[in-house]
Length: 309
Length: 233
Image (cartoon, rainbow over all chains, first blue to last red; front, side):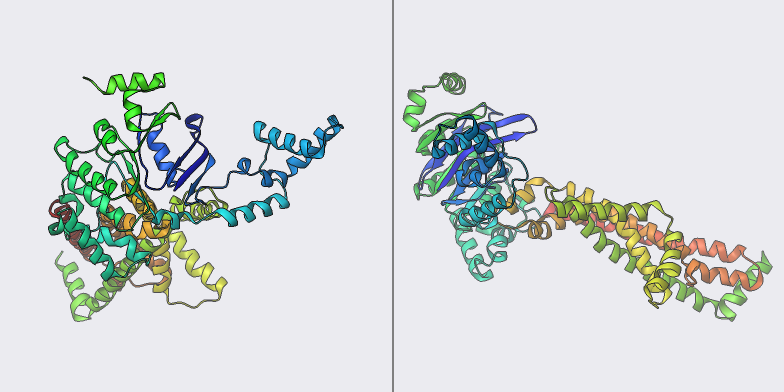
């Protein structure tokens, strides 16, 4: 469903994610946990390119949604001016080397030393756009299928609940206004907030806002849902209602990725746990193994602090 | 004072000077209102252009053009802009517009430069999460701005826009430089007719004061209503 390849995210010199690769399969419920500032939210936000990766690629349904990373495509490197130069140099230095080997060595060297420059000639440009055309999909199209729920809800303050739910489906011409409203009513009934359909977000409680934010994403019929600490900004008494709704979605088979601090919930709902710390995925395991038999020392330390009893 | 009042009364009522004044008032209001509308449109465009992420060449170029525009209109007096518009640009472009239209265009463009900054701060005051949520649903940047961010920004800047309108009304008093008979010019003509300026100019100030007072009350009312919407809705 989602695949990230050699993803690095930097803010200036600060490396938040360092060369991460991971795959999220159809139907999986992946919970990402880890210490604050470890990069878990950034990782989640890279999945739908809310954060543009510094290098590396993100695929959704086999289609490239991030920018094209030249170092991941050998056929692209071969088309570059730098390759010609490096290849000639290597061949000259080792006349005995076969052409195949020299080619492989040149590609390896370019990747290892990040030798590609801004302008690599027209052949490179042509190859770049050919590959892009072949594998990439428009990010805005991909995002229609990737629902996202934020820590701070981010309901549109200038629109009523109903307008919040119908804006995107209607504007993107996925549904007519009537269809979108019917779907919205069905979803509102489901979460028991039908009577709030004409209210503005500022009158709702945090729990109500977050549940509406979740069904706003559902109104697009997404293939996968991303949750960015969905309960962190809620009063304790409202956490339950939101987690219940997420759990329902999980039981219905929705593919989801959740960044959370709710360990009990993660253990119950997730099919796989990811531990992200210091910019890397330190551990990836089913919940039982993750909690009962952690391997990485950093995870052991984390769990001992988080689970007190 | 008796004599001054009599002279003013004779010119203002008996010789229908009030008609001139009312016409002048109408022109002043026209220039200010249409100028503000044009200013808001231009200001919105500039604000949005300046806020587009500048990772490509096109936004950089547009943004640079906007900087020049703002620099010119904020860096030269409005009178100079009026004179250039009327005596330089119009002949150069071979246009023959009525001078009120030129004044509206110049005041619109001038206020666009100021409104763009107001708009920009208004847009920046909107929680970035609002734009993120719209983009995450697959809406593109312009749609997200138009449907979600700008409506909230406009609400934020309503009071400031009201103040911009007030200063616009006052600034229009210089349009007689390009031979427009606005409120100021109309009163001045009354004074010119008998070289007696005391009453006409005091009256002129009073009329501006009343207009500004009315507008500022309307702005206050608007502000209070917007706050109420925030609380109830």
